[in-house]
Image 1 (cartoon, rainbow, N blue to C red):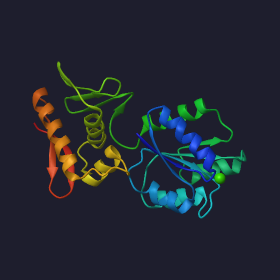
Image 2: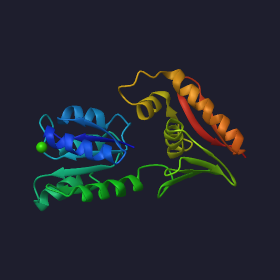
Image 3: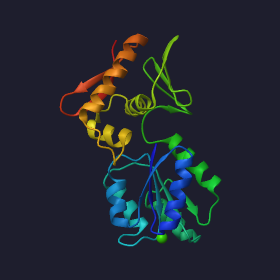
Length: 226
Ligand code: CA
């Protein structure tokens, strides 16, 4: 799970990033509205923590631009003001939730879990995902099909989770590289291909009706064979 923090108070942004990383999330930071919008619209984030008052472009405008562009990534707005008109403005702009500073870390984490569970695609049921006859558990990394199961490596799990959350929608190689390997990685297309081949072998072993289909020059999607 990759979270973007758009917060101009650098110390607070770092504190939030550390808190999220300790919970096992991947966290990136932006400190102004313009680069915040650029990154939020990249399609690689599962959630955006958005400060209301930002240099360059304020959080409300950023959010309106993001939603106008058709991006449905969950957004949790953070603000120092507890003014009710601000809250309404935030929700009207397309925020999924609103938290007033100062907040307790536990409160923030609970909101994040709630928004991630709700998600914006896929068939996420608590901490397990299903697609066709496949079942993927986040706690154990177990991929199962009826009574057969295999344990996935961390990388295989991240890849499979992304494919299952998108179902029959295509995930591009670029998205896979960014979300599974990360921005600062020098992994290339053939790294993705190698891991896709590992997963295909495991699907064969499981006798699953789900297969990973290659969309030439684009990416991959899942297909449930009859
Ligand atoms: Ca601010």
